[in-house]
Amino acid sequence: MTLDQLRPHLGFILGPLTRLSIRAGLTPNSFSVMAFLASVAAGIAFFLGQMAAAIALVSVNALFDALDGSIARELQLASPRGDFLDHVLDRYADIFIITGIFAGGQAPWIIGVFALTGVLMSSYLGTQAQAVGIGRYYGGTLGRADRLLLIIVAGLLTLALPAGYAGLSFLGWLLVVFGIFGHATAVQRFFYVWGKIR
View 1 (cartoon, rainbow, N blue to C red):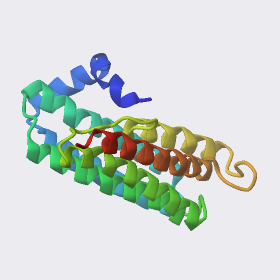
View 2: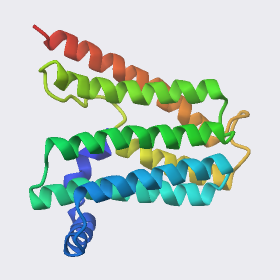
View 3: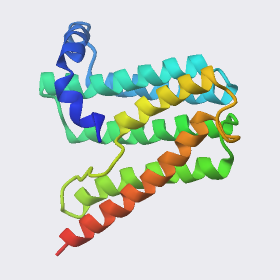
């Protein structure tokens, strides 16, 4: 998919917020850190069963995650250090949010670990391609923006229908999807990079 590819077309939303943030003196790194803090709070809220708060905080994380890149492009501040910080904090954000979901009882731990390892490995293979000289590669089905949107939707469904389906909440089923597509994407990226290495 992915919604990550649509970010350049969301200027009508991000543009005014980007300009306002720049006037306020906020930097891309500050938004990376605030997005991370929102994800920590979201994970805690999922763990505590505060579904509405968790959904709101994931939405904040998604917005701030989009704004850090938008401000960096607007001010031409993209740098290896900022990119490194963003990727590290994004991975920790994934860990906090997904762990909060299954540790809070929305899915058995085995499904949670399946989802978490799928998400982390697909992300790792995307950047490892750059490490071996192929260039960063993000081919695959679910990008980070897609995952955040799906968490918000599944969270709303879980809030409305807490019984879920077939004994598993909608957030739990979403973790199954994350595990399947995450590992499938990791395998696809592995073979793509493997074929490019000479």
